[in-house]
Amino acid sequence: LGEHDLTLKGGNSEITGNSGAGNGSKIIFAGDGGLTTGAPNNPIAVDSIKLGANGKTPTLGAGLYTVANIKLDHVGGTAKFADGFQLTGDINNGAGAAGTVQFLGDGKVTGALGTGANPVGAVTVTGNVKTLQLDGSVNATSLNGNAVGDQDLKLINAAAITVDGTVGNAQAFRKIEFAGGGKVTFNGAGDLTAPTTFHFSEDNVVETDTFDLAGTNITNDAGKNDSKFVVNVAQTITGDIGTSNAERFGALHVNAGGVTHVTLNTANFFAGVTGANAQVVFNKVGGSSVSHLGTNAQKITNANFVQDGQVFDAVNANTVDVRDNRTATFNHATFNAALKMHGANSTATFASKVAIGTAMEAN
Image 1: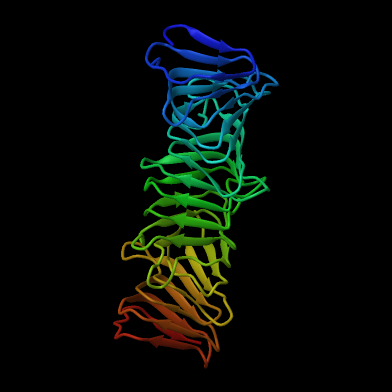
Image 2: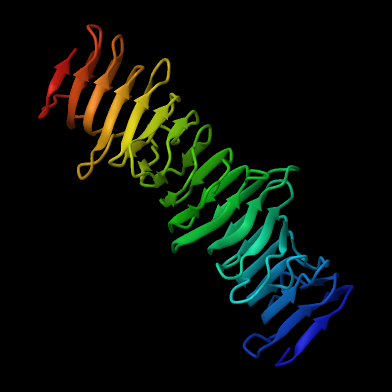
């Protein structure tokens, strides 16, 4: 392919190798049909592919594609990418309509999946135990798994990306993995519907807008203990956070502008809670725990022991309340908070020698 377009009007076409990239080369799908690459030995390298005309559903086969931009032709079209499709390039970068995108199994896109000016439409991943890997920002109407089988979303970005569009609102992913180390920001109201698990295979910062972790679990690889999950609304947590006390997750960070409750209804919260407006409520019958509260640079607003609980590491809070008939256990020498005991049977246990520089009060 050189400076001319190759237009495929229908049926299935096979391209077994080319060197057209950089010559203005294009492949245009005017109809249905598809393209077989001869994978894995014959990658496709062209400057652009246009597909998904109105009412049409072409399929790009498995294999390696080096394409600066895949352009979706029409909002009424559908682009299908076969199991094993891998794109080095963007989809709808600079041009393209909000057509439907279907990944029919494992897939990978190293660039943008839609842009602010040219978002893609509904994106779905199908197949059983299949994973879509994304290295660039997402601008889509929605991004979902499929009711049949289990699908995962793996974000492999080393640089910061944003995800604009609802994720999992029609069908949640089984797992969303953060594997690249770059910050991921989920934007907008209804930005994220919980998968079963968030997994951190690299230390990462993830920020959400209107998302409550609720029953979602967070796991992390061994040695990956410095991640931060940023929330902007109240949290009522029943899932397991962190792999274990020995392999703790980093921190749940409250970024909201006003006092925001983080209510712990789980016994397995192996992470810290940070943020100036965070109010941590220990509410699990039988007890719950956190790794640390606040930081040396920024206290949380309050920790309230409605049920028994413990803090493994440093406490940096404006106030700590221990309710009657409840026991709060502090296992670290740093305790920087005003402590208030609310009844004759309130108990605060310090496992280490502590220098308390703020007031202690008993009702």
